Length: 85
Image (cartoon, rainbow, N blue to C red; front, side, top):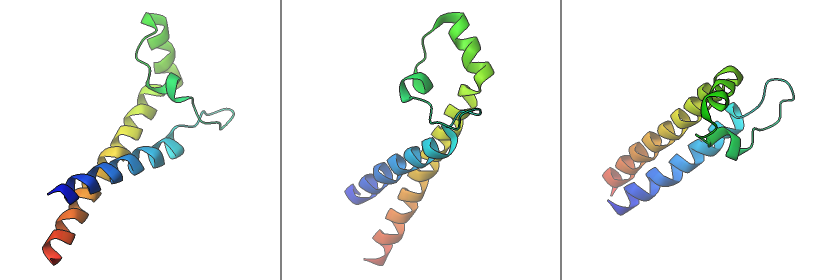
């Protein structure tokens, strides 16, 4: 059970990193968006409006989905490895 959790966490983190590298780029300069800007929830109405226009919410969602897929892969791999024993 412990190995299953460890694999899920490790693959989840890897999924978040890969998702950030794929989806965390700006459209114009193709640079990575700073994590502070991408994951901050403050900024009031104007800040949230800017995030909507810039597509931060879509990028954030895609990064979280990548992390979730990583967790699912880690759990599946954990079950496969547990079954082999």
